Image (cartoon, rainbow, N blue to C red; front, side, top):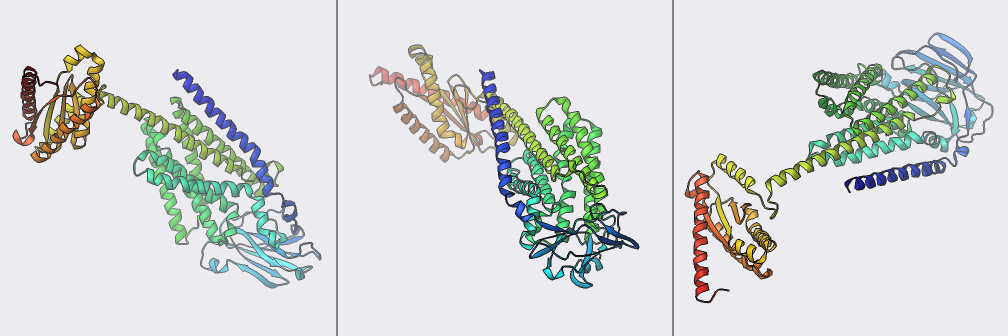
Length: 577
């Protein structure tokens, strides 16, 4: 039966996954088609990539094409001047010149007349200039005139190629960027919103349990990667964020992203049980935090900007990634499904990042090949990695919850009476031991004995006897459980240990107890609850709880004897019901 239920659950899971995948395959292309349905109309532009005269510091290059022109990496303080004659005619009516700025203060001239300037105020103060697109109003009277652009480099090894320069319709300039980068826009927004939502939920969950910290790490990583994606692909510029601030967000998000992953993997390192891995983990964590703090501090003081720290931080990221893979590969010996999903997600991430790195290298340093034209492939890897982290966390959490539930069930069965669901004798004795250790006299012990159980078992059957025991347990629990503990000591014996020694309060509870018995007897048929009771306070015998228990037990037997004598007297005079 259990195997059948498990197989049905697996079939349902497989069916749901198949449905989700099929829906994505069907609807994603349709949504993409809706977004790009007018792309053919808005993408028209005038390319200004040819016939440039370029000066890189003291070297001159004539009639170059920006698509193939390369030069050694420029450094801080270098200067690039590019100049060409604009076409006599272009089809764009209200034109906008799109230029790409990479860590450079920039001036744009038309026939030596300055029409645009950016970044020189920040360059003079040694502050970061940033990178991104700038759109410059370009009226039709500029046709046939000379366009000159000057770049004053603000960072070392800023770039080795010049990006394409184009004229777009002013109203379409931003739409083209959004459409061409729709994949980064979608995935970046999704990662950011997903991370914020999960982060908000887990912050509350962490108040109750530390086990949600790994889910918080997934959320933080998702936020970082979402922000980095939106900034790196320049789609966040629709909010008119300054280039230097957009670059600041980009680098901080990129540098912080590995930190939640390092924290996430701590449990995996700890579970390996190998001291060398734990030492390496601590060294890696401390090193990365120190490097991150140093990078932020140096940038804040305008000594070394975050952009200049990129090679060193990327090196640390690669080391972290290698350490993650080693830990997960070693952990695979445990044959845990969660680790396998986690490893698959990380391998996909590595492959996608490698693809984008190769594409970036081919685009920045070599002629771009059509094979590497796809944008945002690393985002697919990040999405797969986020999914694998979330799913592996879900599996681990489910396994932990199942184990915890099983453990709690075993504990409950060990301390619970099966028939009445009250605490059993073991639980009661451990509670008494704790009271003895506290040396507290503010308690009261009530001993109970259920009358006529043997008679009912013999005359009405054990089923009726069990009903009598359960009914008595219900009355005891309803009356005393909120004031202490109630337990079945075995057979027809019960006990209640109250957290008060106040005689008035105890007397009130006992009065309620006798009323509850009468109410219960009105509900029962063929049987009647009759209970003998003995009471003793901790103040009567000081700190010796054994003497208090014995005193209550003795008083219970005295009460039981009185009840039998009274029952016999009623029987003899004919008043027994």
